[in-house]
Length: 266
Image 1 (cartoon, rainbow, N blue to C red):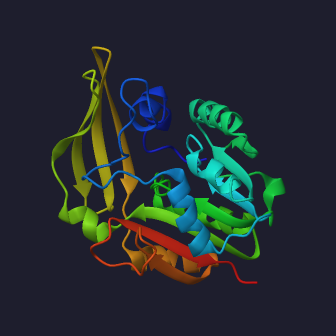
Image 2 (cartoon, one colour; image 1 turned 135 degrees about the vertical axis):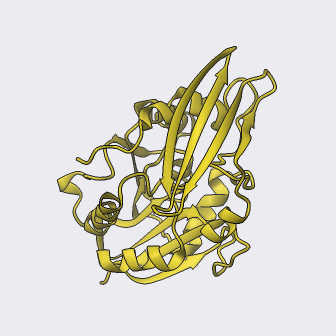
């Protein structure tokens, strides 16, 4: 394993769910890692988008890689797919399992590391979904290794959909600092931003204010232009790499999201 660039367990914890997954204090805010973006559409709407881009069919084996608290995995299971959700956060997985049980959704939620997927998963999945900027949190060599792992677990002809920030739009709305989330009871997230053009990493110093107490954490993510991530996908063995916006149309500078689709050769 490589040395982690930040403490992900401090970032993706109960506080994250409190603000972004319908916490008791006010319903949750839109996930906005940096400049303002529209509130993320619900799991069902995203599942419809993913279903169209990946031509999902009932019975397909789908891996939701870095599934978080499981909203998309549950929605895809509702479309008749056989869904596995993998995440490192037991806090997120507990919430995902609880929500799946409440909705009667059959999803296999698994604790694991996207850098080293189970050996028995080679060629197991028809589709892999990686959503809500869940790629690019390691050094570049390791980020590339994650793509290699995705190729490995896909069946020949399998396909990937990856949802990332659209670099062209992201940087035009860059701000030095902002209140990322504020709930009615006074709880809030306050972020200070730094972008390093030498590494294309966006670093955030976050202050979490909850129940009158404050704590700080730092996280970062890698930003990509489409030509770079296209070439990375091609180097990993994917073909037919395409870029789309959040509406499913071909990517433009006006889109907030960059959805990359790619296919493993048959």
